[in-house]
Length: 167
Image (cartoon, rainbow, N blue to C red; front, top):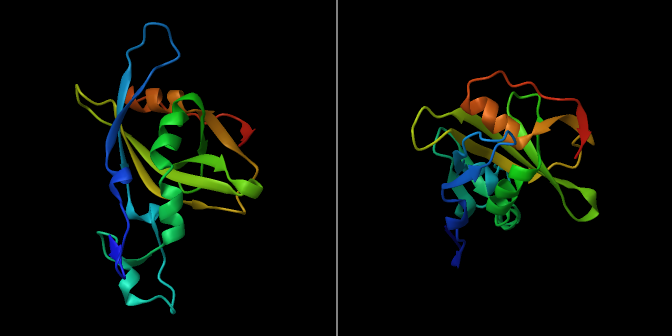
């Protein structure tokens, strides 16, 4: 994506497949396709935004390319891969989130959906819907191990988010 002659590489957000190793001895390794949407590097349009920064969201709206979110998104693939050994948190919007504290303790929040994929090659699809700093995120959220979320999704088991956990 080029804005006023400055190129911004988006290939770090290309889909990729990661493996998730269940905690249960002998359980099969799960393969998860990870995709990322444009809300990871764009924001809502504001009245003073220049048309050069417009970015179609692929649906019905136009958003504004955000160099700050784009910079943060450089770390998204690693953050998602690291989630295999961490927790997923539940949000009120019926999706899930990963949280990474940034300088000053402000949480970088990655919102995602996860769906079972009925395929021999893939166990699930994780769609990263949005990612941005969320200063007013509660310090504790309902949580469960990420690997358990993937496993329950892949096996069509109910998702039971655990107790509150500090991110």
